Structures are given as C-alpha cells and as structure tokens.
Image: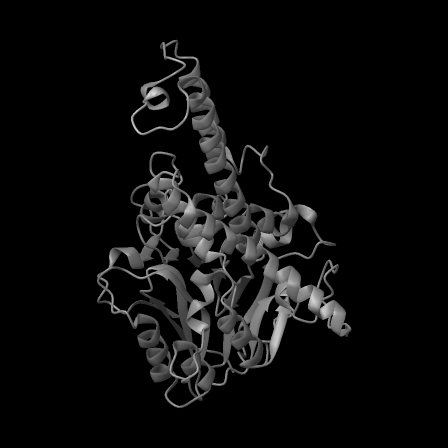
Length: 430
C-alpha cells in the first residue's frame, strides 16, 4: 500500500514552525505533525492562535490518532505549542489527546542518556546519572534565563541589543511542560544519522531517511563552528572585509567622540568615560556572543529528515546549521539523494547559515535561469523583523535567500500571507 497524495499545511504561527503532513491512503489518511511552536505571533493574529492550530489538527484527524509527531529540537519556536496546563485546555493537551503513535526527537533529548554519552542508546542508567543528564540539559536554559535577568536590570544596553538578547534568550529557555509532554505523549524514538525512524510500518510506501544530527562518534563537527570555511561562511567573511575597508578608509575620527565625553548626568570623570564606554560595549558583545552560541548549539541538535515517496523527495531539516549538515554532506550517496529534492522546508525560518551553499547548490530542480520551470517547492515559516538586522546582513528571513527561493523555486511563505490566514497549503500527487 502506498499513498496517492500528500497535503502539507504550513500554519501561520509567526516566528516558528508548525507543519501538518497528511498522506492520503486508500484506507484513509495518516497525519504527521512536524514541530509546533512560536516565539512571536503576528501582531494581528488571535492570541489563542496555537490553540486554534491544535484544534485544526484535531479536526483534520477527524477522530483518528495522529500517526506521528516530530520535534526537531527543543527551541521554543519549535515546541512551545506542545505545552500543557493544569486545566487540560492548552494546545499541547489537544495534541496529546490525539495519542500520537510515535514521537521522533534527536538523540540529544533522550532522558536515559548518560551525560558523557557521545551517541544514542537505551542503556539503563542509575538515578544519579539521570539527574546529571537532567542538570546538563537545564544548564543551557539557566544561562539563558540569567541573561534575560541581566538584560532587564541593565541600564546601559542599547534598545537594539536588548531586543536581540530578549528574543534569543527567550527562545533558549526551557519550556518544561512542552518537553515533558513530548516525552510522555507517545512512544519516543531518539534518532541520529542513519538510524531507522520507526515510521516504516506507520507510513507504508514512505521511506524516511535520518540525515542528522550525527552523534559525536560519527562527526565532532557538531561541536565546532567552521568559521574558516569560506564556502559556508562567505557572508561572515564579507562583513569582516567590509569592516577592514571602513577601518582603512583614511577618514579622520576623534578618539573621544561626543558620546564618550558628554558630561551631563554622567557620574564618571571625563578621562575615564572612554574606558567606561568601551567596557559597556564589551558587555554587549559578550552577552550577544553567549546567547548566539546557545542558539547555534541548540539548532545543531536538529533532527533532519528526508522523506521519499512516489518518486518525490521532501526535506525537513529543522534549524540545522552547517555543523549538523557537515557529516551528511560529506557522503556522496547522500548528496545524490539531496540533489533530487522536490520540497524543501527552509531551515531556521530563512536564516542564511541554515541553508548552506553546499546544500543549495546540490538542488537540481531549481530554475537555473529565467524562463526555466520551477520544479522545486520551498516552504518557509517566518516573520519579518524578529531576528538579526538588515544593516549587519543577518536579518531573518535573509533578503538574498528569499529572492533566490522566489526566483528559483515555488516559494510558499507564511510571512507573505495575512495573519488571519491559519495556514497555506501545498498538495503533492504521487
């Protein structure tokens, strides 16, 4: 038995991801929910949008169980919708009531994992080791929480920096009800590169290939940032070059600009103000560096799934960045599969470094020149103005990437539809 078509609903959740995949089978549809979270709803969206989405998922299931839930990683913009409440009325309670037959998560989420483990494996551990594992998972979120408190108390951070710290810090805070709900709403498979997903019997005729994350034994690049790789970090290197040009422009500038020596209301002696200003800028830089490192670390635990069915290939990479992608992209047989992708769920809401050039250049079904047919579709769930900045060329979604997606693929993006629209739909026939 094989499905005859697939309907993908990309829900309008602002800055977040929520995709419902409905496979049409002769004996009835089967549904897979890929992520369900948001850190910022569109301003005009209903405040109960996540409950509205959950009710729509339940309506589509029409009394049947969810076939599977995929939680690519634990960032709030991917799992906040799975949160429950004491009254049992939250969006996560509704999804839980659909009794998913299987929940897929990355190997790093396995609660039975020894804290020193470099890969998955249901090895029984004693209570002390389990406690250590819980503590290690909490550590990243506690740092994010402390950072948010520091932002709240600081009198010196610029509004732009405060906005970035608040956004990234909030995304990295543990959403305990959502995490616990995912652990207990159904049987869990914690996956790494090359493992069987467990969907084989639940979705007959659909091949599910796990491309990431690798475990540490497979590739330690998941722990490192390849900051010297020109192919993947060309945009960062361009910024460095631009800064060097500006420094060497020859334009005269005072060592003590007006902002350093203005004395009105400033308690510091004039000859100390430059040092105070630099210390404050250093604090901004360090805080941003910490939250960005947290953000990158969590993104690189993302589950990457490639679905192949009826001659079509669909890629769902969560927010995976190059450190996660490196192992899969080093294997020629995987690159051959990726070249045939028909539907690409755009990584990290349109962030440039979540669609590495080495991946983008593999896609053979892009329209290579004007007039070529667009044989590939791209699905992007995002929201303007919430992450990065145009001035630093880090805005999400990145303008150059969005243009390439629009020019070379059939782009369906939630940021281009009204907030009143619950979802955009893509139908694929096999």
